[in-house]
Length: 595
Picture 1 (tube, rainbow, N blue to C red):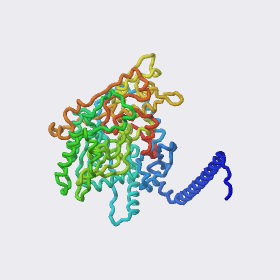
Picture 2 (picture 1 turned 90 degrees about the vertical axis):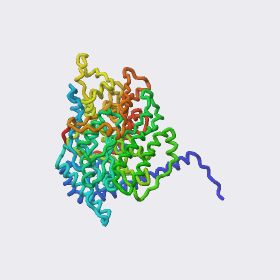
Picture 3 (picture 1 turned 30 degrees about the vertical axis):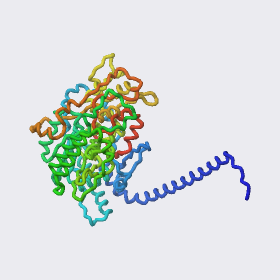
Picture 4 (picture 1 turned 60 degrees about the vertical axis):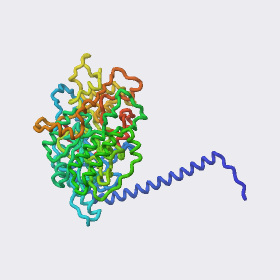
């Protein structure tokens, strides 16, 4: 047996370094091999794609590309639109896609945001825009005998032709709408398997979240019950709720209306008490009284004869019992048995725009936290089904932006269907908001000193850009070089609107002759004392404590459909940006007109 040789620490370190170098060289060679293989495949398919790409360039504008945003990689990746459609069945491709606006359009909006607001009394009352909804892509006919590849190819061809015809007919009048075929496929599946539909809309701007083409398709083509759930009703006065109910009853007679909010008045917190970062995970307690009234509406329009009314009676009793025994609710949920499915059941599909609270509504209907919810649009990736009863199944679909024309793109940002972190130019959205809401008064912003003339402050000189400058000055928002960060200030103001701290709500058109009876309105949801539960907390912004320098205060009662008692406003901007830039991408756009 040979004697062992001594092996020092330096020799061991050198051995490990050589081993790592060898492994690194092997990985580099493997990546080079894969890259050459991809280039060869691209060259082989370039000739076949050239003819098709030229047709797409006619309506998308050359080059026909989109930039995919990713929170890990800051650079844009250019991909062909047809390659996106053909690869949309891949799980990694399931993210919402919008057209990318040109730099000329962005610059025009920046200049518009610098224009003085002037006299803003002409903008009131805040009546929602009368935009037009266009037909959405319906799944082409198919048969069970078709192969999977044939069905997918037929859907791809149909969708590309649909988008081409849409841009040929309306061009730049179109709003930001969904360009990913796989997201539309999720809606098609929900439309096929559901027996009744629950369209969730934010009551602050419900007509914006109500696609008339979807209403006509469900009530006219497939002839299924349609329920409109006006969510977040704790944010608007009772009279506004009543006028919106009257408007939908008069203009859409086949719709059934329910009022809803996940915010329970018993769980209302004192807004003057600041929460620590550790308290963000506390979820609000839903109001199960409203859940019971929603089940009563489903019982009234029960579309499946196989499901008896006793099924909904059980759900109503369960919701009321949860509201009464709310103190032991969390312990009961942990011990609750799983629901076993039955062959005879009714499926209720939850559909609507992103960020309207569909997942929060589903959690309230199930009676426990089963799906995650977020302020980030597109948080729900694929449709999910849950049995709330052995005869009742809920189907939560991803948020989907329907096409429409003559709709302000700034309103899409303010309504939360476009991710704020990806907005290339947020100043025009703040300007649009300031035309309708006194933002500088709510936030107690002093007029920027550099913008005054002879030391005199003229309120008509405010603009969306100056509001962002004043906000950045007040809260010391600066870049690494010490300059004011107006962009970050604009993002924070837009998030205040999204969370409900700055209330922007619209009223229905004045030409509504029908008025819903008080007794019928009371059966839809909220009690008469809902206005009394809405508290407004104003922060004295003259001085800022050391704890508030990085955490701007809350200004008013906030939205009801978040997952935590605290707002993400207390998070770092870097953390918040990473949380919101992983769901949406942008498609290349030619120059267009802005509202």
